[in-house]
Every structure is written in structure tokens, then in C-alpha cells.
Length: 113
Ligand code: 5GP
Ligand code: ZN
Image 1: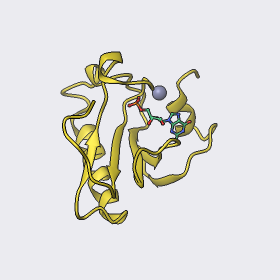
Image 2: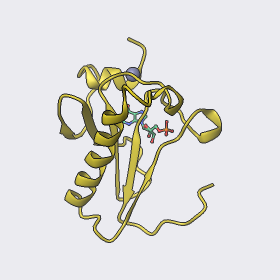
Image 3: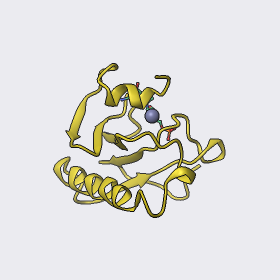
Image 4: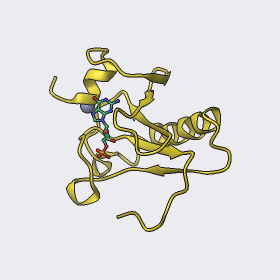
């Protein structure tokens, strides 16, 4: 298996897990860009947002979003937080297994660089 996040799903690479169910896992980013910075990923390998299927992955995409919402609350981000999904090289994606970044507990500027 050559996908880093599939290896985290399989337990082959350790991660600081915040949440797991049959469809998703969430874990802290190894190189946090904010006091709160975790990733929510599907267990199913989907390389980029372009590969998310409108029909077959619709419920999964919603589940990722609501997992992010729930964990952001649990992490004390009621005042505000940011979610980011980078797609492909131009979008800044470095790991090709989709993931939703959740960043919080610091002021965010706009637009992102
Ligand atoms: P991307 O740039 O693809 O949107 O985000 C990939 C994220 O994965 C980066 O924020 C990076 O710090 C994080 N990351 C890369 N390798 C690992 C790892 O082995 N463990 C964890 N927890 N995060 C990782
Ligand atoms: Zn994968």
C-alpha cells in the first residue's frame, strides 16, 4: 500500500486519533498550522476531490463535514474555525487521499496564499 493515509487507516502508521467509525477517521496533523489542526479522512481511498463521486460518495462527503463540525465543537472552536480541502498540485494538495483540514484557535486571514 503506497498511500500514507491508507496506511494510517490500516494502523500501519501511528496517528493521534480523535475519532473513528466505520467510514471516517480524524487525527491531528503532524505539522499543525494552528493550535487546533486535525484532518478528517474517509477510510475509503479517494485520491482527490475530482474523484469524489456525486452519487456514490454523497453521504460520505456529508459525514466528513459533520464529523469536522462535531470535533471542532469538542476541540473548543465555538468562536470560529476554518475547513480546507486542497485539490491537486495547484490547490496545494500533498497527500493524495482526500482530507478535510480543520484549523482553529487562532485568527485566520483571507484570502489564503
Ligand atoms: P495537504 O497538503 O495534502 O492538503 O495536507 C496534507 C497534510 O497531511 C499536511 O498538513 C501534513 O502536515 C499532513 N501529514 C503529512 N504526513 C502526515 C503523517 O504522517 N501524519 C499526520 N498526522 N499528518 C501528516
Ligand atoms: Zn489512500
